[in-house]
Figure 1 (tube, helix red, strand yellow):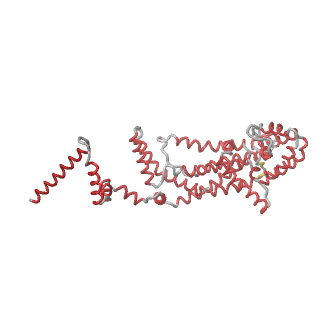
Figure 2 (figure 1 turned 45 degrees about the vertical axis):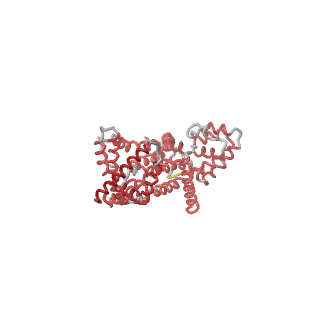
Length: 430
């Protein structure tokens, strides 16, 4: 399932760029293994590649696990607020609910998206991994070079494009001519990398002149793809059917070992992850999550049988790496109390507020400032001289006002007030 999805996402702008970068890493691993250790094996490169990628993602994994641990404490309070406003759908109640929930998040120094952000960052990387694993020759120059002699021979045959299109649109290749250009050498390399023994035989039947170069290519690729006796370029289900047909116990074991390991290791990885305490009565998704814990490993086993063994090897190794990392992360987080995590989160939240332009102390001071004080400050900004000058200009503008206008009535009120002030002053003087 993941491999099929990745095939569709492989040409997306962001995924494509990340795949290119990861492909450079895979190519570098192969070059180092070949030149330094004299090892030419794609299976070994996949293992090293997987370990490096998941090691680089450890900080994101730790952040996600911290949020998960915090959620186990926050969830009861969040669910209590949700229950409080369960039957209130008016806007005021909804706003009040959001406000109370935000207070809880601020209390623990986190946010509603705290657990989603690391996952969102990891998703493009994980999707970009599959095109690299599925199409090694596109990214590893040395592997592509193995296929180029047979590709050149194929392209020299009259009508090669139609022959390759017919073979490529069928199983196990499944590359439609409407989506791929079979006149290009890179496309033919990608097609040939998905060939199995029966597909090579079909090609030789259609093009007898390339028999010798096909034999040389398959022997070389057999060496590159062989991992503990398993051809990682072939689907385990095909290997299993061949082994059953030949009554080979060793072949049957070799065919099932990678898919079974992929399922078991993924189950172990999921079980090692700390699960937040969720009330199943208030959260119907909890039961679905529990079901997925058991169904996803089974799906991995099924896909491990039907897709090339290289992908199954990647799933198994990635699950083992995640399990080892999870044990280390669990030990690391067990040494940190909940109070320590909350203090760290609150400190980080305060720094974020300060970067936005205001510290927590400033925000609290602004919140406690009354509007009366603000208005008083606004008033004190104008000096007495400026106020007298503005009043003088206003009197001048209304001096020649028309009888009956608002301005003339204002003058009458002003004259009355002035006379009243003079009268009051005279009485005081007496």
